[in-house]
Image (cartoon, rainbow, N blue to C red; front, side):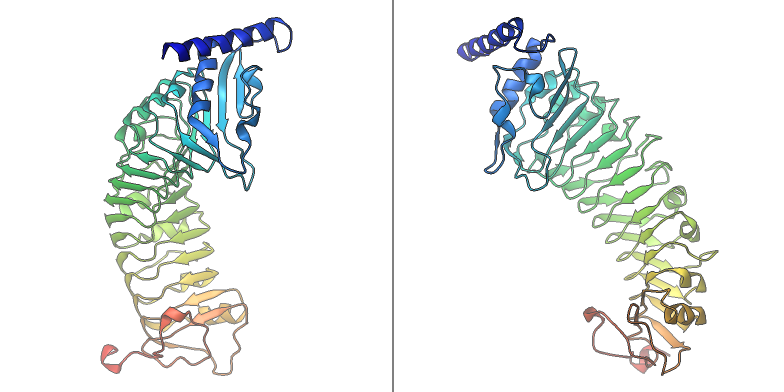
Length: 396
């Protein structure tokens, strides 16, 4: 250990000598930051095909290294790896020494094969605003100590092997704007997030469970994706507060209760609520302006509201809808204003459309397995099955 420290200081003295000789800029890197960069370099390597570290020569100015940006002799930004498309990235582990970069405001790691845990020492970087460690093999839990990063605005830990809960301390961070935790193995409930500036929360494809409460997430949200988790219970009390959403995906969970009509008036482009246990009628108060609505594979019932005829891609299949398909759907379908209208596997009793009507090739209609004989040629997905109508005993 003593020999290593001596070698580190020798390298630093060479750096100082080079600076005094006029070979480098007049601003000299802080000695501690110099040693930290050396430690980080020793713990990581380029994967075959990557050359990110080829210019990390510690006899020259580290502030000129790729991915390093300094201000007043301190490392302000550290972006590890070649961010260009196709770069294979880095391999190794993140050295806990990174926490000694006390002025660090931005840290990111490009996709690669970096393993090990997230250094809890990152909590010592009090000025950190951006933390992005995605698409690697990072494992272990999210350190609760990250809740000490009170300036943090973006937290991206997506596409790793993280386990355990989302710490309550992370939810308490006051300046968060983006939280991206998707495609990990996180479990437990979603803690309350208090930041009034949070606009994006993405935790899809995890093992999160429990219910969403009225104040689980702030009304500032514009993007919310919780798809493919194990979340349960009603979501209506939370959803009616999130009236700024332009993207909502709660698909593939176990949410129950009715879908609040108010959410259909939100300024959204996509609404994904499929494969849950939502039930009851669905009655928007006005024509729905959302381009893509998927309510399939639930337990929704009652008649189909004509307010949905303004949706371009509409999935209402695999529910318990009954009655006639409103005539306005036929008009918009024949005018090619509706691109997809999937109504299969319900209990619908009829649709007013001429047997000779020609559905535009750009549009798809599926009425299979309802309480009627489909009157026109349909374009159904393979999973709709081969049976065209329900058995009469199911339609009484």
